[in-house]
Length: 253
Image 1 (tube, helix red, strand yellow):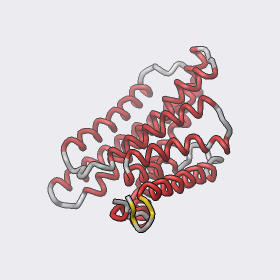
Image 2 (image 1 turned 90 degrees about the vertical axis):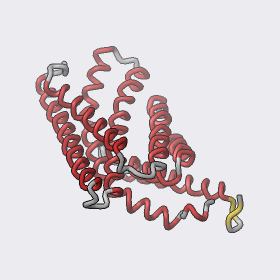
Image 3 (image 1 turned 135 degrees about the vertical axis):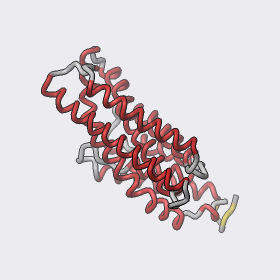
Image 4 (image 1 turned 120 degrees about the vertical axis):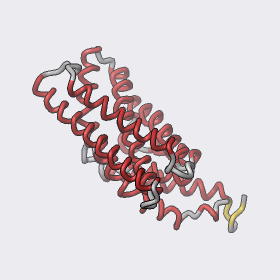
């Protein structure tokens, strides 16, 4: 399909190339800060705006091309090639949801946040963490913080949802932001859990060492979840607005 002398597919390829470069550049710029990144927020916005196909292609390109900077490590490459395309798929589908002010979405958000909070509290309250007392204290605090973030987000979502349903406020944008942020936080958690499976397998760790690696990953997970909870709300609307101005969909059809 032609549009102003340039095919639509060529434009999509150009947008994918630019977004891939932006993802690699942002990861490189923030690579020295542990747990801090904006790749999640940027890929989320791009996938939600352009859809599944563009999002997945960008995710695969990013996962492969980053090897030129950080080197080829099989466990990391497989982790990225599994996680980021699935991430783009999820948010590409969520971008097609027309309205989030319905009971189904509210139930899904509450289920996600409640499950995260309950899992964190159970691990913190019950003696399931078999590590040293000194390290256990640090991990327990991290779990309480994760649970607190989930509970606060759940309460805020339900307040806004109730006000929107009663017509007190136009809650569509805010509720959509809550939905995307909640799912992004879950995806961030899944990234760490997937790494807890892939890395020990490639490293040939014993069961005890793999378990220690699993518990140690929680301290890295907390700043990543906090970063996701901060960057997605901060960047979603500005980045989406920039995409609509730079790449209007009406000119791609």
